[in-house]
Image (cartoon, rainbow over all chains, first blue to last red):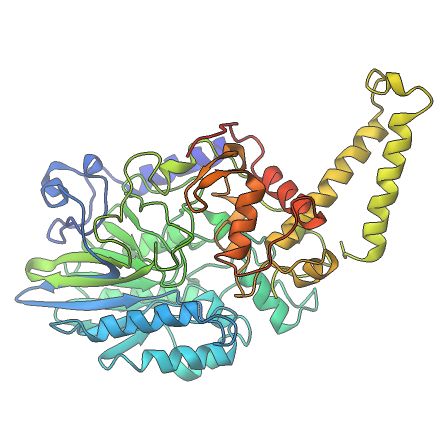
Length: 385
Length: 152
């Protein structure tokens, strides 16, 4: 652990050059949950209070003269309807709320993990639910969508990644961070179902460090951004965070340092990611990252690595399956200000926890965890149904 | 490790061996004899066998559920989907007042609440093999956590 801390400090020194922060024209607002005490004075004014609102994930953006909004939904983790209707209800609710936005969002980004076990029945169900939203939709995959048939069904429904488009002065990029796992299945003669089962186990060890951007996408990203002015806004959508939060649960991409090298020259970069199912905020140099809620269930905060700038959400009530989950709307306002509003389906004044007994991360001060053992032995009976 | 009847039978044999080794000819001195490395290894193996069974139950392994006569979920959800590495289970904080149940509760009460409510499974007996295995895994995974009974 000491070695890990040393390495993190060294990386921080390399990436967080003195004074480097995301471009201030992209303001942090009260809707993006950050610790105000950790922000510099120039930005703190916008973060003086924290958001009090219902919960989803949306983002307001603006660059130049035109303000607009877009919506993020991810991590619906749908099972077939005859197994679990709870997640279906929540996915349907999110889509209806996105469609009801007024003024309407310019587009919806679906951030991956539409299905739970990559089953074509699950992906078709998700595709049907997404039809509720009539505005433009763009998609990136999650690992749960991919490893039953290695993305065939996903790509047939939602197309290929990476992609990019420019919209009202912002360059948007969608990356695939899930499909580049090292082959852990062939030597062990796993069936596709077994392969998917291990991938779907967050705290499993069999699938290894599967999350990554890959050399091919790094080169594509470098080329794609090279025609974009360094001070203009870039928003990168990924399923996994583009920094190291907690590798044992793949709360990262393994090549995040290389990603930072590509993004470093750009002064106005926002990474929006899913996978972690929790409120997260981080900055590395000139890039900020915002973690989105799932509609399905909240993950606990990891035992270490929670970014210091993150203001954790309240401990979720496991008896209320609409607690700790939702979607988001994001706004791009004039002058490139990005606002993220978590649309959590909880009482609007009970989202964030500051006191130790209420905070999703403060709650675990006395907890020490051990990685699991049972799946390190082969033949392993399986970690799924 | 494949979970078979022979594995479970093996555990029973180990238990019998431990019983014989610790009882011996002079029961009164059972806890005053020095432990041999073999004895300690057997104690450890017995415990870890339960930990691994509990790990598999906790991660929704259908074969293990069947062998231990348990159905912990009917929603497709497994315990580990909200508690990776058994995080946020807080075994070191029980017993305590538990809001969801509105009562002073043990870890076993909480395990059964999760089985019945979020997972919509079938409650297990407090002294069942499945409960002991789940308890073994949860405690093992939280080794080193500070004992903090009663904390919310």
